[in-house]
Length: 84
Image (cartoon, one colour):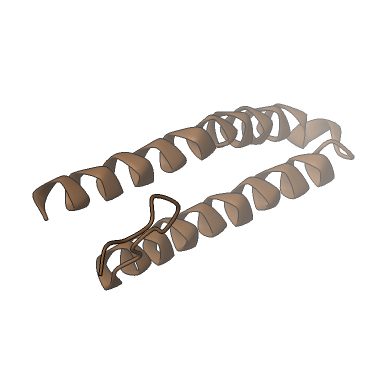
């Protein structure tokens, strides 16, 4: 039976890859929230303000990882399907 053009075959490999990258993305989001929360609390104390600023910098850099994780997933999936 010939597949229609709109049909997509999601094999086990695709599902496993998707789950791994979703877990990585969720961990990244959790760490971003943690850095911003701790950084915000640090801003209540003058002695910790510099550390709070650095936590905001770290959280901002991790925000840049979000699209990198998505692109890595897309490239990984494409490589798996090109090999098949």
